[in-house]
Amino acid sequence: MQKFITVRHMGSYKANGSKMRPDRNNTGYPCSTSELLKAKTLEYKLKNKVEPLLKRGRPGDYEHTLRAVAYGSLLLKHEIGQRKIVIPALYLHDIGWSKVNFMDFLRSPSFATKRQCVSLADHMEYGALMAREILEEMQYDKKLINIITSIIAIHDYPEAIFSMKNSSATIITESDRLDRYGLAGRRRVNELFQFKNHNEKQCIGIDQGLRQGLDKWFRTETARNLAMKWQKKRRRI
Ligand SMILES: [Fe+2]
Ligand SMILES: [Fe+2]
Image 1 (cartoon, rainbow, N blue to C red):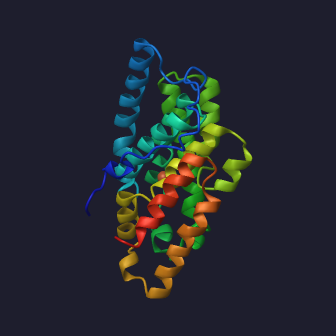
Image 2 (image 1 turned 90 degrees about the vertical axis):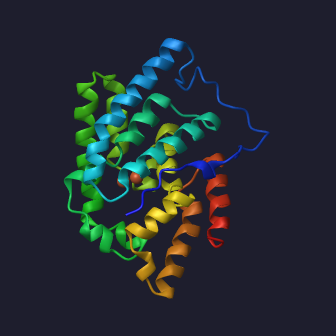
């Protein structure tokens, strides 16, 4: 199976020019050289830790995770959120797939039916437990571990995430969902779910699901604008 990790299609996208960037001191964005080094070291460790786990999960999960992290970093430049929550949670959010049998999920024909799969709920539950173990081993801040794992435990239920009213949780789910709209992520979803074998009616249903997702899966202006832009390009590919 081909791997797609490029995020080139993010291109020169900018949020609405009238919008101010969030104050990076308030978002936990690394400001000093030592903070930046600490953040980069954490990312390096997390990446190494999750790679073998994600490669045991669904095909393409590792590359999907790297793109979700890139989207998270992009959103943090324009929207309010805590980098110390968003980035680790995105690296860890799908490691639970390494522990579950996901055939029910792969065989399920639409986004709506996939939501009902046992493996979907299980990967969130296992993922939260595994993430806690990894972060505790790294001696990560206890309060942040609690927040990160509570988000991972429900990350594929956008309405539950949005009801948390936590801007970092919102960015995490949006970054994950954005990968359904970007070029590389779309190709991955097409291959993973064998959409080429779907009949016309099923393809229309998937396209409809993505269009409805624009309202259901995004809350911040930056993520919604990006998803809308990519959805418009969708038919041309
Ligand atoms: Fe997930
Ligand atoms: Fe994901």
